[in-house]
Image (cartoon, rainbow, N blue to C red; front, side, top):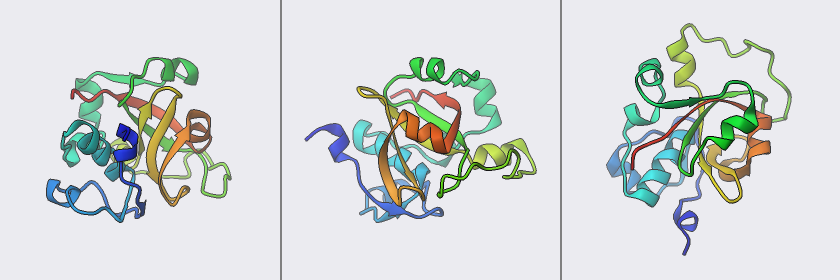
Length: 160
């Protein structure tokens, strides 16, 4: 069984994730992108990430090594390694309709960071493992499909 086959397939629930270590050890029926990231690290690397390690913060951006998207998406993904966590803004709704710039209004930058979509970058071929309303749960998407719905902002490398 390959490592990816060990990941849990589950339906989508916006409010389920991140979860405690105990909840992560139970059967996963539904969850969000944060839970998919937790599941990846726990299942593949036997590493539990708590809420503070999953959700991006302004402090994390300034104090840790993040890979920023400078506008060239090909160059951004060329710098990533398997297992990097990609944080992205929503670009389109589930019907594929482009969102108006600024339509997701957040009062603060921290609130925006809290609401970024997350996925795990995988190589050969380049794909993103995540969970979304669009896919009705966990899914492995090619980079171009991911970038159609989401605009990558930064990526983080978790020390395993």
